[in-house]
Length: 197
Image (cartoon, rainbow, N blue to C red; front, top):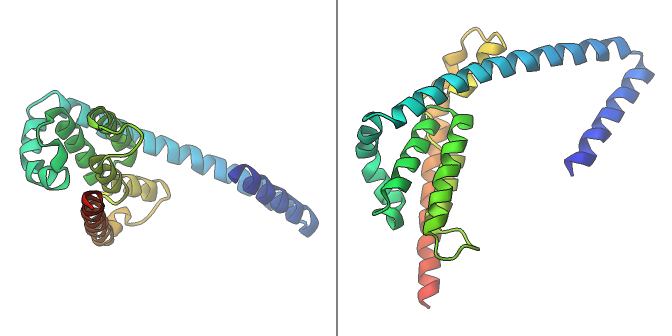
């Protein structure tokens, strides 16, 4: 669908610029956009490399054990099916930490590793297990204490106060996480009741 939508937008934009005599403005905006995209990519790359490195170092130290102990009650509540799978718990813990730090791009490989481990435990390989569904919900609606990615974007766009969005982000992500977890838990409970019937 996007393969069709984007070319249409581009053709309409060029046609309008030619007929309205704004071709020079179009050229200027294209080069300005390219420059902004490169600057944003460099800023994001630096941020992702920094936090990915920190998470990788933490993975090989005792910090991961401390984090696991802190998150264990939460993981037991959210993922009751994997209470004996230490590897899955570790990977989910690191994924949750990356999401809490607002590192969506750094959290993705960790989430994929956790998903792969959960798939090995999954009895029906053609359907998502309850734990896999919960992990997807957590990644989609995760609590972010430090929205690093958004702050990096705002900094690259010369925001006067890039950290001003922290408090609204807390409210939005906490509401999203509570809603997502509650609905998922209710649907899991409902599906288990239907299976018994």
